[in-house]
Image (cartoon, rainbow, N blue to C red):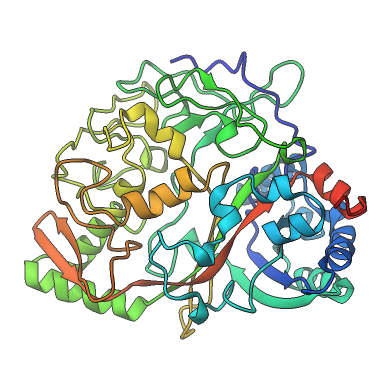
Length: 484
């Protein structure tokens, strides 16, 4: 595969929201959800959009900020450069889009149009029990603020709230834990797709490409472990991933003009039962006669520090994603070591979380390995709560252009099904996030035998499916008259 960016699309970094690309890497985030009034919602929506439209952070600024952040971490820049105004993002519900006169945007995706609370595929608890997104708590406009200075973040939050004329139904603080781990103690956000695309007229790639030898699978890489994906999987108006020829794009998805450079956001509040997880996995380990930490690693597919079970015991940071399942991964000259294949799950169980939601080079029920990249998502999650808090967990956020064939496929069709993504074998469900019918135990086949449990380690507490517009679309929505 040729990683040369020639022929890849131009990414409009001044129009794409930075929370989509490259994501907010700040220490603190604040999630504000407003519900519009039932009577004449358009004025309240436009008033709030007018307040925030000019403050949404574009991708170009987000990428520059990320570069500064990296320089600060390596002692090459002054940390004072990070005390800038908080970054901001916004997303809208179908109800808001209809109120603003854009029913075509409100129905751009079936799952988003129906709404998370009415979708039965995820097997969530009844929406009446939700902390966010349930009856009377529906989010019509979600604003995300992010910063490294908690005082500046609080000030920015107060400014936005002071101008809103609709009901604030959701106010959630979040922050990154030391080492970027989630509350079960595992490092999070390691494996992410890398967008193809150029950022200027001379063809400069969004991500620098490292020349690599031919790999024994279907993918091209920006660097070892960094899988290149056509940007239309995540951003409207751009070429999408082909399910048969990964290096050649599929046409952009049909869409209304105002959707260009926008995306679809899945927002979920996931409460983690840390005590239950620790106790239940200790019970399982005792039954199998294995070490509890080893069993927990099998449920995830990685050790807490991110080392994959199929990799080396002393894996370096560069080797955390340089592995496949069905084929051997070669050593890279003057780079990371390769890893041996594990097609039958003898080192990483087939039911492990990372293997369920990203089978890499394995054939799945959806077709050959080439198809898997078409189901990728951009994850932008962050933890909430502290280890001493009774309530803590993960705010799961991801971007895509087809919720049904991306997020829902991974979360339901693969994570919840004991015979998928690999067909022909009952290996159990993903015990971390998989959900089964009430009164039914969740089962998984691990290295030393099968385990089962009635304990839910992760409890969905609600959320929303939303449309994240481009910066230009937000400005137009804030100013346009109701066209109904």
